[in-house]
Length: 135
Image 1 (tube, one colour):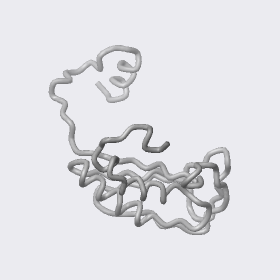
Image 2: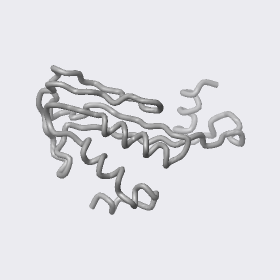
Image 3: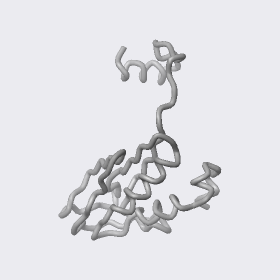
Image 4: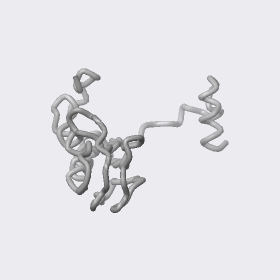
């Protein structure tokens, strides 16, 4: 069975159609959705991207919808997603810190600085957080 058929079965309220007993977690991933928004108030910051450098490295993936010269509109402020994969949470955090530290964008303000602060927050690092962390 293909993954998308299993996904549709689960969405319809059924079991995926294969044995779940053989599944086990493998690694840890942290995804950071970089938006053209004020990193403190999260209000849209549309405008042109003059230049940017995407992070690279083992376990780092960048999916982006814009490039230098693009203009970000207020309708969709998503610049891209930076994902960091590690063998465990601690190593994923180390890679995420390096990735967000290597992300450079000249243009509108963005949520990169928010993620840099979040990745240093003790509650987040320990995995002891809830929505009040952002309040």
